[in-house]
Length: 213
View 1 (cartoon, rainbow, N blue to C red):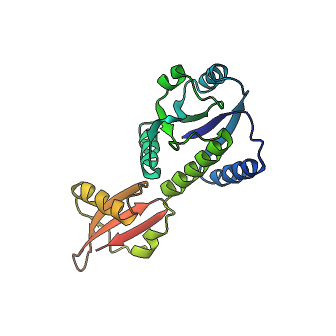
View 2: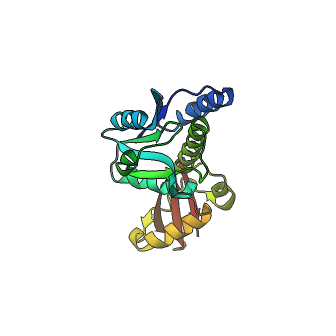
View 3: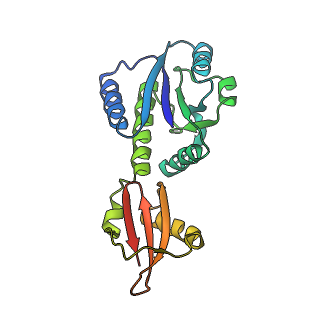
């Protein structure tokens, strides 16, 4: 999925410029992320520009009156959108006086980064940090996995699949526990060891493959 952040006006504060540049650089390692600015102005004018710029995309409006989502919840939403074949998403940060009701009604999601009213440069920085955090979750780079499970080597003895569909729900619950209820892209298979006939559950999360017996 291509992610485009649409923001009213360019960051003027030094900390915001530095932070935005840093997180855009980091996000470049995980996919297609871009930042575009629209001309600043009043709520009606900016909302109209944001609406036109996000036409044909999944429209996520950042507004304190929206849904309050945890990082895990927004991660799941993004993963669900990708699985449903959504190709482009736009994140809309409006003028200092907020978005219009019309724009909020045309959004696929109105997301509250905080119940507080955030200065739009700060909101932009918080959004980029959360998108970066979600990207690392989806890549499977969370450290608890390596601490809990041993990396599975390429052992040809484990080549006999055992009803992988039968463990679908159970493996998902186990996986969620392992990564502390933070979702990640994952696949699961269950095997019988050729020699010992012991059962083994294999999880593939991001680029890592893990096993448990």
